[in-house]
Image (cartoon, rainbow, N blue to C red; front, side, top):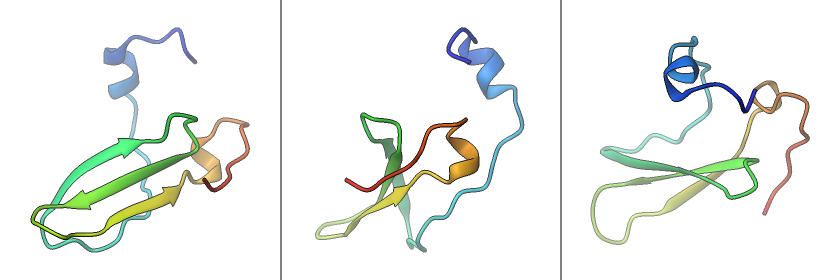
Amino acid sequence: DRKQTLGQIFGQPGRPVPVAFEKQGEAIAFSADGLGYYTIGEGAHVPVYRYDMPRASLGGRSGGGE
């Protein structure tokens, strides 16, 4: 629901999502279309991982790759 406040959103139970093992996971970002997310670890020359948003988290929207 786009009418919820941040407090209401973060007050809800979390949902597990897949992530790669990163020795020092540093950041997460969401794709502009809301259908995926990215993670990156700390350090030089580390990979950026992209994930499709799990269907259960999309609230009726269909996922896809970029």
